[in-house]
Length: 248
Image (cartoon, helix red, strand yellow):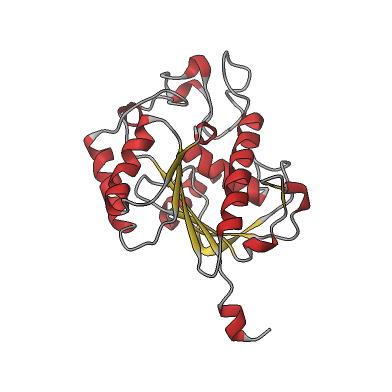
């Protein structure tokens, strides 16, 4: 294959964004499915995010239906008024039952399964399976729509969902066992607890036409190799600080 034909191969770019600041974030309260709104700082972060994406072509936006997410993508839609949007309840964060509205201190924030067994809490493993299910639907649909040009998809969701999905794709500790390692990291991808609200995490599929799809859904068991590249994820300085905290 010539270099010119290689250059013509289109890619699927998936941009993950997290909602802006809420009062629960300030008060260190667990939100889960609790429907909260952005603070003035959160609206500023949403505007900053929109400015970062101003010159970025966007083909479609999938989003969690919670208010803080809808408010976060509103400035993006001002810049991209013709972009279709799709709300999907499976893009909500982990349901935390009776823990919602309670302090971060009520669970071990470094242990993703520490809330398991509490009343109304969605088991962490079930949460990750839900993330894989919705991601599989989106990737299958958008891979089929990727033509001669790169296709760019935005997924607006919650920080715990972004981190848990990426770690599951990498089969890294805490999210191993859901599948073999399917993703590699680029030089600008750093593991963080969750991305900052004005960050954009980018995952790329270089050959979307090669992904196995069955009945409109990604066939996870049929995936060969590592088709996903996490090109951007969090900030280096935050990742280093978190690693030092874990070590000490």
